[in-house]
Length: 145
Image (cartoon, rainbow, N blue to C red):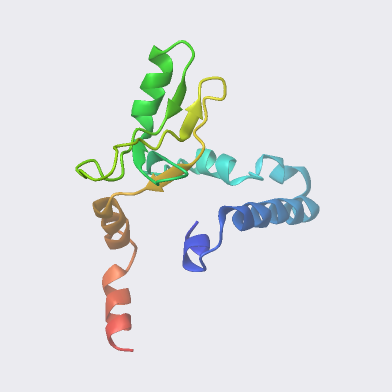
């Protein structure tokens, strides 16, 4: 995971790398490495890694963010519903009519938002950064460059 972050690789490249490593390990070690994960999802489960992302549903047209848990509750409460964006671009404008966006965010049958915007809180990112091994030495190395 650190390799992926360090070289800014997308998750698909990391999954391809894991699949390649599994093939190589199976060729070298045989059946011992059958339980080696071949996807990033399985690797996260086996290693106990958790993403601390807050997911937001984003409107494709106006880019307003909605909390994903609120959208899930709306979908559970209504029997059949198409969730639409309720954003009004200039609500206080007297010269223009107030018209909401009304872009489809998610449909009841699909139960999957059109676009998800993942977000991590800054204090969680800083905590992860400060807890790296030898963090102070890395800071000294950076300042001495």
